[in-house]
Amino acid sequence: MNRIGHLIRKEFLELRQDPRLFGIVIMAPLIQLTMLGYAATTDVRDVPIVVVDQDRSTASRELVSRFEASENFVVADTLSSVDEIDAYLDSGRAWLALAIPPDYGRHVRTGRPVAVQVVADGTDANSTNVALGYAGALMLTYARELAAASGRARAEPLVGADIRVWFNPTLESRHFMIPGILALLLLVVCATLSSMAIVREKELGTLEQLNVTPLARWELIVGKLVPYAMIGMLDVFLVVGVAVAWFEVPLRGSFALLLLMCLVYLLTALGLGLFVSTISRTQQQAMMTTSFFFFLPMVFLSGFIFPIENMPQWIQPITYLIPLRYFLVILRGIFLKGIGLEVFWRDGLALLAWGLGILTLATLRSTKRLA
Image 1 (spheres, helix red, strand yellow):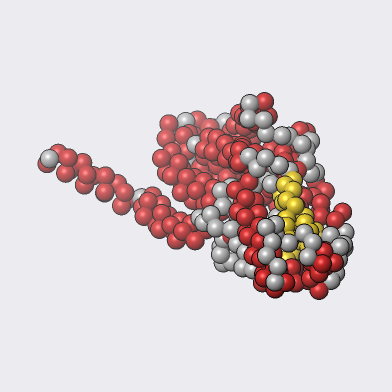
Image 2: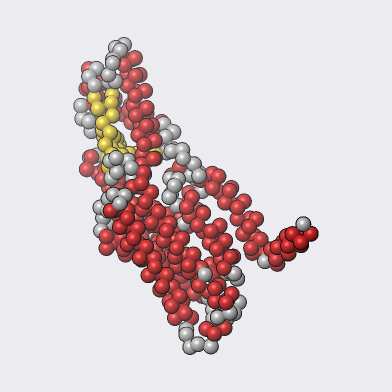
């Protein structure tokens, strides 16, 4: 026990000598627990919907007002035609669309059943199921109130919902999750490998040998990152092949565009790993920095598991700093919606800016001198 006690004391002394490692071990879990405790919620609130009121009667406005008054829905816009629904669901500005038929008010007045069409974006199967449940419960309650007001008891509800789910009609959760897994795999593999690039040279003592070579700084960085980029692209082909062939996830968009956006994302992942290697002294420290400060926040704050719209308002602006947020929108849009750059160009531009920014910062911090 005496020998074990001395070993424990030695470990604490080494930890105290590296204040950055101490901060990672103590402060990072507290910060993440505080933030993720609010963000990690499966509740679905403020579901954005668009309304197409083709009847424009008192009865149709009453139905719309029920959705506006509900804490579960936010009416994002009122459209004049059902043809405008596509743009809102494609871009993610709405999760549901409510289409009220032209004869809705007349059917309600005469006591005849009428169906209101509800179109849902099935990309996120779990959230869509919950949102459809909210919509169905709201319309059922409204139908019962109409029946009670008319004094007629009906076996069939007066107002019903004709539900149609787009992009993921079967609401398979794996169709939503697997594109996200591709993004996480690229981040973990490329960022982890590149974060070891400079640190490993320091630990092995080979950085001294690089000092006497005529390699420029950018040549050293390119030589370090290109192998990991090739590994990353190999992973892209493997994961996409398994996703489409084995899990039957539909790839409705352009495969060439998918590869292009994966290259942009690789720029971000590799730049992030290289930046971590410039601020770390050991491989262990690089691993812990990457895991605590980047991987975990990206998983929970990017929309990979929990919808960003359900997070508290003070958390949501922070998610704009997460590059994985933009890549998830791009991946799921290409896979499930078949959309192109004309829809997600803002996300692509933000991802490219993030990658160039972190790679530039890493390049400026890197040096052939021993740290």
